Length: 192
Image (tube, one colour):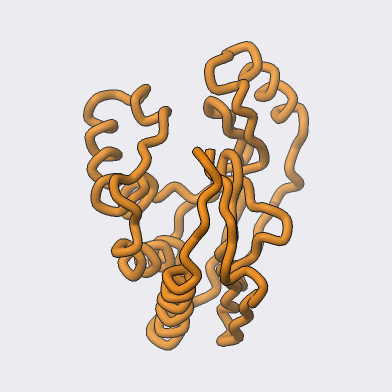
């Protein structure tokens, strides 16, 4: 796609909605959300990641943010290519969530993970996927590898969903402290 200029007023409203939702959530029900990295690394098409077990706390945060922001979905939502390689029943579920919420990875489809790599060339090349998988499996994450989520951040992203350097738009501490990066209210986003 071409470079897109994001409407500063709409972006501010979205970020304010997320900030308000998280601050309200903190006052309702929140405990430290523990995240654990699971071995081994997973290589799916162009993505390399470590899965994180879903917990009630992570699911609650995800659901709250989706509920608050689904009115901001750009229609029609983009459908990722990998959806079409799924079995028919799973594909239907994913397509329904994309249509309703803009993403297949929400509610029952929420699968927390830490992405550690993206290589578009691997999308259609099983040889590259195999090589990446072997390399990732040769490394081991120190066990146990865990932490507590202390902040929810919203950032500009680039190719493959990679967070861009200096792309922080909003950071909400789960300890009632909010920080905003005021230099990013009017931004140009590059979409692939």
